[in-house]
Image 1 (cartoon, rainbow, N blue to C red):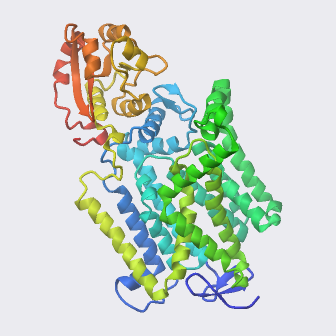
Image 2 (image 1 turned 90 degrees about the vertical axis):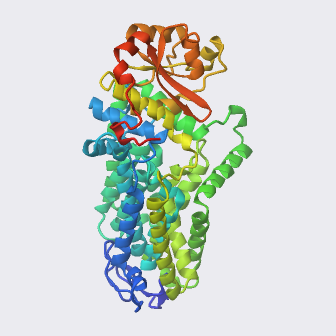
Length: 579
């Protein structure tokens, strides 16, 4: 086929031995940023039109937007503190194989993400910056690889620029780029796997080994969700019927490498912990939580599963909103042109099928999950944003693309300046209590008071049953919401929820072992019998509608009185600010 057709940027394509190429570029390498803009203007318009400057602008903006005030606001009380604490215990214990929380082995998460944070702790120390900085690096690499992948597939610097900018303008993607979550690492590994597969298909099949290695590490990061890239690749092979790829030996070598990476860790955990590991990681995490969720046995019907699927898709639409709509429109419009431009059904259209599969297949799979969170689907934001850029590039003329690109740059700069000037503590989270500032402040005071002890802290009342036995209205504590920030910031882990302390045990622990208790104002009145028993308050803070208290025995208070009565409003450890 020698007919001339157009790329998304309006440049002519022509078929060649290595695939579909623009007439101006016989060789279009992945890292190639050559080529000058067609825009002959000056200033910002010409600057933003040049691929190498687009790349540099996106890199600088991403670094600036993701790293500014990174250690402000404290870690979120659930996932951030939970992962940060596990990584901290890796560094402190020297056991990098089994993730631990409060000294107890946990099997709900493989260690891949914690390894990255622990390595960051080795460089930056154990603090909020060290916990979050790996996500910043991952985000920068994701945005840069998105730019390069979009330009590689669609032969258009405008599609590439709008793709990279679109990720930064996607509030959900950007919000989590500043948190110690594992989902941006998952996204980066997913992206590397797709890019290396395309490279293996186009150039040398040795790239398939990298595909397998990154997929294996993705499984070590987020269990079976790490298989998104492998699933997308096989969906691509089935749709395009490229069965010849299955005859390439290094593709199977890559899959073996992936399996070996996964097998080594899973085998070691099973060898050490046996049935306990299988019960928690397989039966509870993969089946009870991930597949069944909160669905009762009586509700496991086809209509209810369809309703659950619809609700999960709605939740993703709520968080992805415009990028999901534009992405689907871009996929439809791109493949609809096959009838209009048959020559586009060569290499570049086939590889776009892989990108579309990488967005749609994981979305449909996760829509069936019993436990659904939109951040589980962070990898699919990349394909949908790229196809959004494809759609926008086709409804805008070349001159207007220049203006749009300039506006994107200016809007990102405005966002950045607003972070610097307006927000004293930058956060996209509207609910301040998710960072538990009160618990964090009390925990830091305990750590400063006794930085080397590391003894347990007793939580009272830990359960509703204990609270009712003492005449209280119930336990105000969500164990995981309290334990994660408390353990990370205090280094005095809470007593396990499986072994809650009664009122008598709490008093004995403080009297005989010089222990510390975390409770509420009401709980302290019960412990001290309204002031008649010799227990003292170490710290007291109001958070929301609750007043939290740390207390100890009178003897321990007198022994450490000088330290207890120090001003801890600006503790030097863990880079905390005044809250």
